Length: 102
Image (cartoon, rainbow, N blue to C red; front, side, top):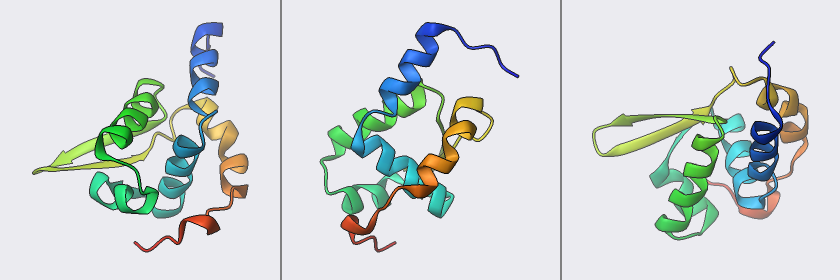
């Protein structure tokens, strides 16, 4: 098991403390992979705001990304032990408020 220091753990739980970031993680859990262009209309936030939240998730190592042409796709980093440990919590989150249409 990966050893984690206190600062890394604090950063991860800071990342998980935001509703938008939790919603992004839940959507990625449900869909597997999503493009930024799919996330923005679902979350109804500006592109700069979405970019900020995705950067926080990337910096914490909770998501992976890949570029395909001009599009950027995100998926969960299931190799991250802390994310794996929190999957039951993410699965239990409700996204009914979002009117998701992918």
